[in-house]
Length: 439
Image (tube, rainbow, N blue to C red; front, side):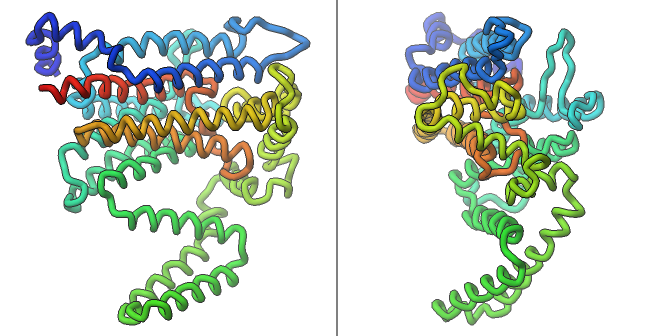
């Protein structure tokens, strides 16, 4: 570390020190603009979510979430300056130490954190300020995994390398699950999308997607019907491609595995998952079965979004969120505020901004020349995409309610800092890309 920092500070000429500090001309300003736009819109909708016409409080008041979020936004701006001024090579060279420190922080949190809503994932820093290390683990894992992939060829890596990459990826979510933060742990599955870009076998995606499809279909369709459908499909595949007959034993083994998975779903749901996790699955399958119980969140969320119609009720005019019909309306269900107050038009615009940001990030990743930078860019895109997809999906009943915030938009300092660090490390690396190529 001292060697890296020493070279960047002492060996540079005055001219190079100026160019490394003032990298703003090379910054991707479109992405920066999208970031500020999402943060500003999120802040306004956090205020709208907690606004009460009977007790109007100034948007800047520290007594409500909008005022607290503004303080986190201000701190994020200072954080951005630091991220852009620091020598961008530090992020690659210190990837493993950063990762190790966050792992240690997760373990400390598991031991010393006080339970909050059944979760031991928050560190109390005093003065009413709390930090959730699980959020910071995302960017730390992205750095470490990218650093590792930059040192090996994923298309040709051996079993040992595969296990190292798996450990880097899944050690943090295992600790996070022990903290009882299942939603945050699920996000780490998004890293597989980034690894796929670097040459990971598509078979892993196929197996994962098939397992998820079987799990969901087993909850929706009677087992005998599903087994019959699988049998018919496999028979048709064998009939269409006679070469599969040569692998008859493999096909039979695959059929047995699939049938075993179908019959194991009930055991997993009823004996492995905790009661509140079982309710989330039930709410996803049929929230109307218990609209006043486990189906309340999803039912009220859909009512709020649907009540907005095409144009919405207007800023600060929402009723479902104002009168607390929608739970966690400024965090996990912030999208309901958009749907109710700004309708289909506002929801479409917000989705469009997120899609534009994701396209921009993928473009930034593709123009990188180093494996580390490119992989990190895809990690950023994958994490934001997963959060966006699940958060919006759970508010409209297409994904289970797992407590995942909407990036840059939901209330929460740890979340905002995590996504800010993720994005601006990438922008700092990209801003120096042309200079690195010239060397």
